[in-house]
Image (cartoon, helix red, strand yellow):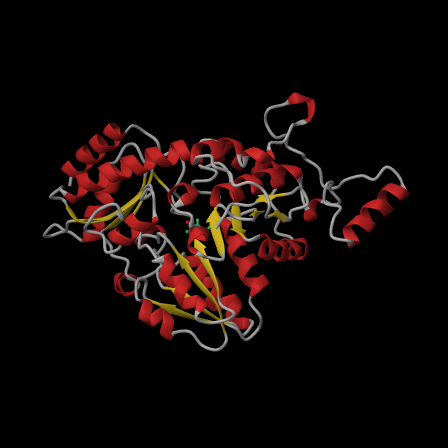
Length: 421
Ligand SMILES: *Cc1c(COP(=O)(O)O)cnc(C)c1O
């Protein structure tokens, strides 16, 4: 799919020249042909901290309204819920990075997910979802969407026959994460698209948060919409929440219209922080990819570790597909601590985590600081071991979200912590 550029009114300019820049250049500059000269010769995008926009006189207002009626008029702002230049700037950069016609920024990743599903799914429709999806996304489908008469079928990740079989006449959407959390399963995007395209009205969505546009560009495989939690790698500093949806300009236009109604708009200061984070995205992700690969190999050879889940390892069930469709395997490594006789696996694992000195114990991932967690306690605390196991979450599982600290320091921290158990 040839990259397109977005004119300031948000519509895609299909005739624009493709941007031949690499991902680092794009992360810093966005699409080079869209360079914006800022007020006061500033290099950076100003934070336009305004809730509304003014009109000089009634004629000015009428000109704007007239242009808007004819589909233009977006050169300037009208009201904060309908757009903001700082937000627009980061949207264009993310669209360029993903190779999409347009992008829409949201205050959180979950607003991006819920807004998109609410906007595109008619009452009575049906979703097919892979079972390793973000837990809150699954809960949203099983609670809110069920109330609207929208049914969801979960299929095992990696089972494409089950995926094709789950499709009903009412199916409008196939949604998957890739890679998934916490087992880093990778969806075969070509197969997902091929299954969807056997039917007329099925759209495909990939939550690509764990991959980032540096490691994977799902739109190039024919996926319709890509979603990111910008809170993770895009922002990259564990200091801002954001979400984004990227795709073709027509679909994005419809989502933008409903954003004016549903009202989940990103704050300009948050947008500015995401844009600042984006400039170092390629650098950070390459470092995180490299450290994660080293850590995964180190853990796989360690006697205190029972199993490692990392798509960059040949032992991972989706290694071949990851190698074919990703240019890096990401910064998250999941692994199981080998059980000890006479101690609950959950306790051994907790002792290991508590012995680590570099990573903080915290949810989230993708920032400069390494974070570590035991999913049994962090996301599934209220469940019994048996209930967790039925959801595929073992008590000895560790999710390690690697930051940008020195690889050698992280490996020696793991070495000393594993020696303590
Ligand atoms: C964090 C996350 C979300 C939700 O994003 P928020 O910014 O926390 O709302 C959705 N999907 C994935 C894969 C995530 O990791």
